[in-house]
Structures are given as C-alpha cells and as structure tokens.
Image (cartoon, rainbow, N blue to C red):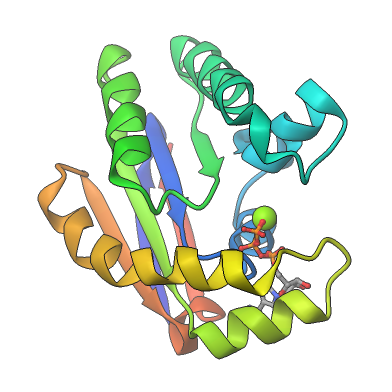
Amino acid sequence: SRVLSFPSNSLILLCGAPGCGKSTFARRHFAPTEIVSSDDCRRRVCDNVYNMKVHRETFSLVRHIARLRMSLGRLTVIDATALRRGMRRSMMRLAGDYGFRTGVIVLDVRLSTCLSRNKSRKRKVSEDVIRSFYILLHKAKTDVYKEGFDRIYVLGEEDVDQAIVTINR
Ligand code: ATP
Ligand code: MG
C-alpha cells in the first residue's frame, strides 16, 4: 500500500483523464463536503453536465467554493481533470492567497482502462474527448514536479486501489 499524506490546510487536485476514476477515488478517501467537483458545478450553473460552453461559469463556481472553504481553513479537494497547466496554476495561486499547502494526486491509469470504464458507466464522455485529454496526461505527470506543489503523488493503475490517504489534522 502507498500512503498519501497531506496537512489539513491543503488544496488537493486530482489529475487524470475522464473515466480514470477521480470521482470514485475522491468519494473513497474524502468527505463529500470536502470535494469540489467541476461536474457538480457545471450541473449547478446550467443543468447539463455535458454543456462544454459554460467552462468559465463552471470554474468560477469551483474557485468560489474553494476560496470560501480555504478562508475557513477547510481541506479542499478539486475533482476536475486538472490536465491543463493553466488550471493547475490558477488553483495554486488561489491556495497561496489563503496560505494553503498544495497537493496533487495524478491517476496514471491506462487509456484502455479509461475507455472501458467510461463505456460501463452512466455518464459517458466521447472517446475522442478521452483520447485528447489522455494525450495531456503524459506531460502533466512530469510537469507537476516543476510546478511547486508541496505534495505530489503519481499513482500507477496498480497503486490506485492500494492507496491510503492520511490527513494530519
Ligand atoms: P470524469 O473525469 O469523466 O468525471 P472520473 O475520473 O471521475 O471521470 P469515475 O467516474 O470515478 O471517473 O469512474 C469511471 C468509472 O470507472 C465508474 O463507473 C467507476 O465505477 C469505475 N471505476 C473508477 N475507479 C475504479 C477502480 N479503481 N476500479 C474499478 N473501477 C473503477
Ligand atoms: Mg468524475
């Protein structure tokens, strides 16, 4: 098993392709109220989890909730793909505003696994979208080491189910 440890004043990003298991991982290891999911926020603002035209409003809400939680000193987990550097950078900046530590958990799950998991779930993403995000994973999993995160965990597919998360409260 692999132990992932974070201080309680952390902003933690999950990072991985659609269908890799980010939301499942988040649900398994964190309280529902600690998780800020971009899909939930997308639904909140426009009633349609598939509407990709509301990126700005969706992430405005993600950041807003994250800010409020951090202002109250609450552990915050961002459930979004986090595969683009700009998104990771903006979340790091936000954490800095509140003196929060930053963590990233990269789920390095094979493309074939993402595709097959996507097929067997209710909310399906197009295969092209998964492929195009997956291309970014290769760069993201090395880039995260240069971006100033306090804690970095890159989990291979075999490590994901063995992971243990501890929060130093
Ligand atoms: P998205 O980016 O589209 O929100 P996601 O990364 O949040 O995707 P999940 O919704 O958590 O992915 O998982 C996709 C599917 O794979 C679900 O049906 C889930 O039950 C299954 N799954 C997730 N993690 C695992 C795992 N570790 N082992 C087996 N199946 C899994
Ligand atoms: Mg999800």
